[in-house]
Structures are given as C-alpha cells and as structure tokens.
Length: 170
Image (cartoon, rainbow, N blue to C red; front, top):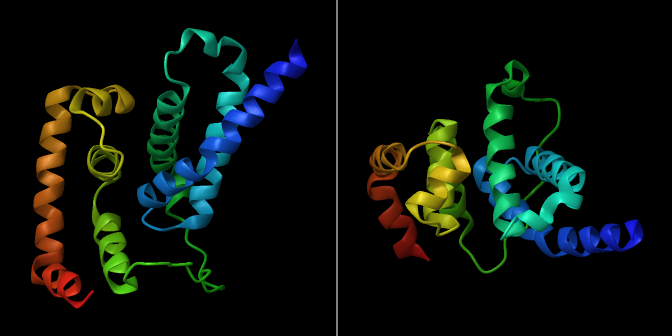
C-alpha cells in the first residue's frame, strides 16, 4: 500500500514540477536557484501530506497554493534578502522569445512587493479567478482586486513606453 502511494506521488510530482518551476521563476523575478528551492520545499510539504490528499479535489491547484504560501513565507524571513555577488548567475535558456522583453518584464516584476507579485502571477500568468487567488494567498477577494490594480499601475509606470518598443521590436 505504501509503495503505491509513493509511486503515485512520484508520478504526480514528475508531471507538475515543470509547471511549479515556471511559476516559481516568475514569483522570484527570475532567480532560478530560489525557484528550485521553493519547488523542492513545496514538493516536500506535499509529500508529507500525500496520504491525506484524497480529501483534496485538485492536488495540482493545492500544490500551487503551497508554492505561493512558501514564497510569501520565504520573503518574510530576514535572510531572504541575501544575494551572493561572487558568482555570475546562470545564463537563462530562452527559446522562441525576445530576451530583452523577458528581462524587462522580470525586472519590473521584481520591483513589485512580494504579495503584489504573487497576485500578478496567479491572476495573469496562472489565469486564476479572483476567488482562487484569494484562497491561494489566504486574503480576501477585495484585497486581490486592490493588489492587482495597484500592481498593474506600478508595472505600467515602470515599463512605460519601453514595453511597446520591446514588443514592436519582436
């Protein structure tokens, strides 16, 4: 019985890891190392609860919720502001997209506060409803609407006309 549960989790995790990693990269503004850590911690938490997952309607959505909450918890830690500077970051593998546009968007996302960034990622990247976003972040629906509105205003102000120029160049 235990072996089949572990096999089920391995299959679940294998199918979801890429999706969680992409979301984590957006949440961390392109910090792939932190994104890997968040995905690993999310899957670890999911594994601990895997035996009780029969009560959850959508384990993939639950995993996304765990990822967002793990990210927000990490941002509150004092040590989360540490940035190593002795090594250059890995070069991102970009296929089929404009690197300047991607970098501009990641930089603009990185300027948002963590909760606003999480709202933008969940609402506009993950295409979640306001209620689903509110549940994932454990905040009210009106807080999601307010944060989304403010975050979009900030993104527009940061990107200004440069976004139109970057999109036109692609």
